Amino acid sequence: MSNSRPKSLIRRLAVWSLALLALSIPVFWIFFSAAVDKVSRDVVDTRLLEFADQVRGYGVSLMAEKEVDLPDQNPSNLRVGAGSADVDWVWQITPENRPPVRSDLLALSDTSLPVSPAPPATGFALKNIQSTLGSIRVAERIADEPLPFDETSDRDRERVHYIVGIRKDRYDGYVADHVARLERLAYIAVIPVVLALLGISVLIIASMRRDLVRLEDAMNAYEQGLKDRVTGEFPKELQSVADRINALLAHNDRLIERTRKYVSKIAHDINHPIAIIKNALDGNGDKDLMSRQLTRMEGLVDRYSSLARAIGPEGTARQRTQVAEVLEDTVGGFSILYRRSPLAFEVNCPSDLSYPIPRHDLEAMVANLVSNAHKYGDSKVVIAATALDGDGIRIVVDDDGPGIPEAERTSAVNWGKRLDEAPPGTGFGLAIVQDIAELYQGRVSLAVSPMGGLSAIIELPGVRN
Image (cartoon, rainbow, N blue to C red; front, side, top):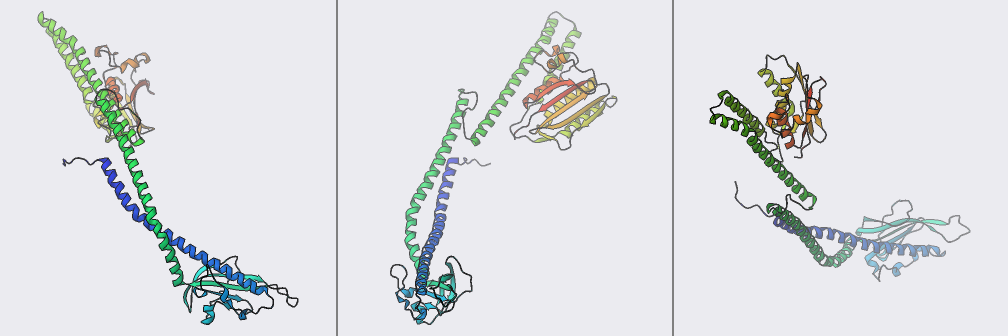
């Protein structure tokens, strides 16, 4: 077993916070870089679309002039952006029934851009194409443009193909320029992000440490006798711990009170026979009387020993006991012990029913009820167990004996009086069952059984593991 001191939770949180901070910086840089690249491409694409609108306007103005012959026009005065040279950009206007008009670079290199057979569109579409000039990023659109009024023609519109682009290497250069400018902002942005994460981590750790200190102070107040419980309002997770601690303290209080009651009862119940024996010895009294008193004292000791063996819940996590198995074993034991008895036993219990209770405690309760039923039943005893809501159980032992009058049922399970004052015929078993059931916040009740005798009922609530 290691003797090393457990690591501090706060220190562990601090280490994890620093690890998270260290991981967040590259993650932030990755996402920021992706966002910068996207924004930069959108900026260059926007310039391309703006130039495409200029080209279309240029084409529409040419076609609106009735006497214009498009191939003879000199397009060198068409520029994009703030005076960019036309050689950086290429464009082509292709009317349906006339030769195309091209930018300088296309005209000088006698290159034509491919015309796609797409239907007319309401705007330019961006895409990458391959041409003799290499890879080009283009904005393309087909539109039905109005023609000048002509009495000799029945056509008022002509389909025109517009394609405007920039060589891909030049496009990537523009994007890289924007990325370089925007990436400078990353160094400025990462500082407040890191500080914000660091501040949040410090606040979280400080808040948790404060709650842990409050819980520690509450426990110190209990240990110093200032409080009888761990009191205070804590976060949900810590409140659950405090509730468990208080439940354990309450359980210990019940065990202490139970022990005190044992000691008090032993002292009270044995004191009377001792006094009788003492007086008898002083006066050379009746040996038979002294023998009876000793026998009575032995019975008292045996009864209290039975109670002491029922120790109750063993901590907050208990192994589940199969109820049907305990019932069958108990009935089997009585059948062997009293095999000459004509009494019949019947057990009704689901085979999968279980409850978080030590087996010996459940056996003690069932055995005492069955013992009473066997003692006072006429011909039959029925033991049944069922599940209750919230993981609880109900165990009922019915017999066909004389039962207990309703007025005496409450006192039958109350062993606060002297044992020799208990109602006749009730036995000591009910007191043992009641005492054990109370340790599990359960209860014992008595009623009339369907067979006319006594019905002893144990109800144990669900236990949080």
